[in-house]
Image 1 (tube, rainbow over the protein chains, first blue to last red):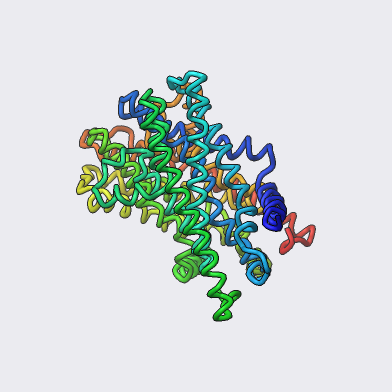
Image 2: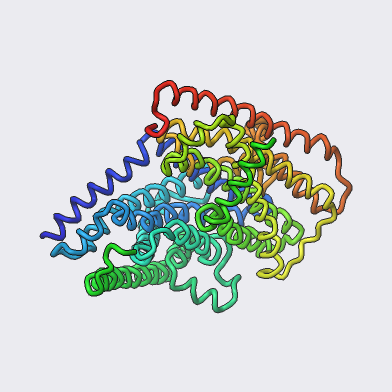
Length: 262
Length: 256
């Protein structure tokens, strides 16, 4: 019950953080324009390459990836407790840190889901992807799942960068671009050497985007569900690692008195 | 000229001592290069690899202009330097010009990064048949990005709310600037807008410098890049002086 109350209050704080950066007008006129431009930018590469199939491939991958990018902003948001001076208070409080961290950063997950949904369906309309109303509904949970999965990784990275907050932007950006490169967003995972493929398979996005592609290609439901299930496993694993990391880092701070010294 | 050189030297020293923050955007360049080159290579269109190599160079220049140079005034304000800089007898815009020019020049390192990614990660050596076009184009692009950054540094310092657009204007400009895909692929009604962005002229010149065919109208095209940079410089100069006059008048230099 206490955890739920903390989560609710922290979500309100996250909403205030979000509104500090974006008003509805600037989000629609600034962020959404950027997101559509980004998706179109990659789609045009497909046109440059002279391949309608590549246009479709890049559109699907990048429209979902832009949402995951927004969810990855949770990496930076996790460190704001350090800058606000509230991190030590969270550590010494009798409740777990996780509800407050998840609550405060959840605004970026919601932002990510909204971003991906808008980008995907707008791109489908503009570039006339073969998307029936039924198919459009089928892929919606897969898009949401992929963003949640990226958010779980962001929580883990947020725990790590809370030890070195100055690295927050670099870690978030490098992870974002790495995922764009190797997770099947722009080229198939099989394009890369086996070692890179192994890394891609334990990262978010890879299986989620694959599930969307399979659904859109009309593949059997069992294949789509298998990929979706793999994405769930990846998301749950990163969430577990994030929980353990937050607890370990907080405990270490309590033990050696370094809570405020990073 | 003495002020310009002194400002450039001071910024060089500040950037060298603050590599992680100022040159952070150069860390992303190899990743962009990997993404773009992978797309082209996987599609089997090796003739277009030059396009994929040049796009990250322009991304580096743009990001240095927007995220580092564009933030200079705000950073000075947070560090309590702005009052001192404005109080000096040197023209504020001239000091900013020297500093922003230095930051934008660092962005040119993106070319080496991108070329090396093609060589090391993908084993592709991109030949440069027209270095006599490539080098002046890079120099003119650095100048034009300096002019553009001067405008943005003024705009971002005017209102906190303007800074939210810092993250939003990247891809619209990459798209309109034709940094990877030539602007002829854009709808006809967008193409005139592309032609007033220095990135589009620069991108065409950079791509052409990698083609063995003889190039046409290079001096004229370079002149347009310089002209667009100069236009930005004039607008930025005007805006900066208006801002400084207003801050002095209202007594809010450190408070805005």
